[in-house]
Amino acid sequence: MNIFRAARPLWRRLVGHLAWALAAMLALFAFIIFNQSYRFTHFDAEAVPATSGKPSGFTLAKYALLGLPNSRPVDGPAPDTTYQNVRLTAADSTHLAAWYVPVAQSRGTVALFHGYHSQRAGLNLEAVGFRRLGFSTLQVDFRGSGASDGNFSSVGYEEGQDVKAAYDWLARQQPAGEIYLYGMSMGAVSVLRGLSQHPQMQPAGLILECPFATILDASKGRLRSLKIPEEPLSHLIVFTGSLQNGFWGFSHDAVAYARAVRVPTLLQWGERDPRVTHAETDAIFAALQGPKQLVTYPTAQHESYARRDPARWQQAVAAFLSK
Image 1: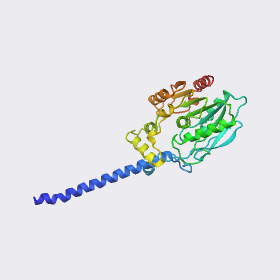
Image 2 (image 1 turned 30 degrees about the horizontal axis):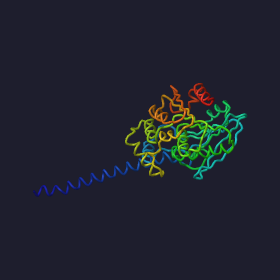
Image 3 (image 1 turned 120 degrees about the vertical axis):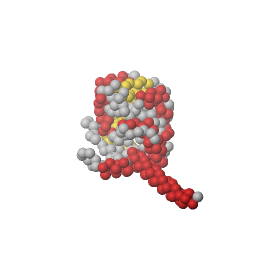
Image 4 (image 1 turned 90 degrees about the horizontal axis):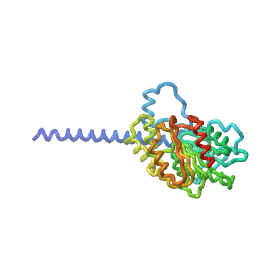
């Protein structure tokens, strides 16, 4: 009996030490998730210098704890033709930069919206393609990118305001002209969100490429492309990002947005896309309420289809715009 009583304090101390160790591990895990989530939506104000060779063990540990460097997207080359610098203002007073290129005897205008961690120059090739088809173009820098304000990306949630600002500017410039909205990846989701928020927007049509179905799917796709287990990290990242960014990420749902779309839509997807699945694409396509067409690219990944398969892209887009 005396031996049992003497052992009890030791047992309690062991349980206490284990409890503290578990709490420390959970705190460290939460710290890592917080930083990784934050760095995904918040860009570094200054460019992160490129490193050559394999990162050191110290560098890898720092990235694991504090998040990967995430340089703010910087604009690439301007259009190789006469263009106009345009300043837009979103509903929340965020200032946005855009390039406007009018063409003679224009058939209408296409507003182009880039993907995550990109900028307006990333769509120069697509813009040239639209101009060859007789359409003026407006290439927009989303908030946090290029020459627009901020160092933050909500991965399509707040960017719906940016789409509305671009649409309104074009509607004022040419009240009788047809406006088409083109979006790639996050840009496509931003277009869908903008239309769901502002039903008064009535573009002549949409051209959407590789949109993700939900922000949770986007998180899974990013982890999958990095060969990191998707669960439970994807749910934890979206939940943490919701707390950081002031909106409920689990409600950021392109499928739900698509149900509000009643204008003609061309949806395009690359069959080798490691980030956006066939099921996501099918769900968005099924949700669209207006006339719609789905075109797939057998060899394309999550990339520019105009660059990967220019003949197929030009044919699909030209056929859609001629209807």
